[in-house]
Image (cartoon, rainbow, N blue to C red):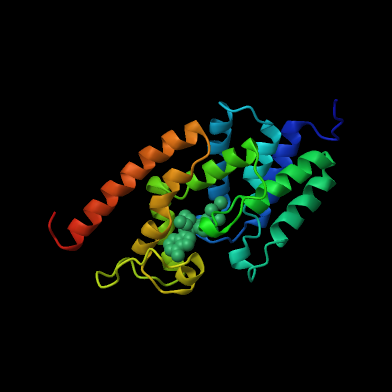
Length: 223
Ligand code: ADP
Ligand code: NI
């Protein structure tokens, strides 16, 4: 089967970049255009070794965080609806739009209590790229940026990370940013989908362990 696009693939991508930059103007530093840019680049890199539709991967990466529900009173439909309307305007095929919508709806880390109702290799690639941006040097920077944005302390030696805490309880708590490493960041390397993603995550994970080790030592003036 062949498809007729009003726009060629490159034009669709270019238009999408313009749209996403506009939608994310003024976004918090961890979720701004540059987060999208990094996920997009990483997704293309991971996709090179996978059998995937490159247009779906690129659109999924570019559109995955427009209208994050965290910043829209928990409404999880705004982002997907905006993306679908935008792609329909570009006359992208209905199958591709449906696939991209599924990626946007299912990309988020939801801990253990979320059943996987959709999976595709394209989703796996974009999810790996998004998770990689939450770990390593960039992940550390984003965590402390987000922590500052929500008024969390860096660390409090009196607060022992409670690993049984649910994600919801954690979000609503004032736990220090260091707790976020135990609640999420250090768990991500075991949740990667692709071989490339696993390899990159292992490296970034090792860097976070070095960071934490030094952090605690510097806290006590040991080094
Ligand atoms: P995603 O971009 O995958 O949707 P989130 O929206 O959960 O991820 O988080 C965005 C960024 O903010 C990530 O780098 C994440 O680690 C960080 N972050 C989220 N919640 C917290 C928190 N409570 N404390 C510190 N950093 C956080
Ligand atoms: Ni993201």
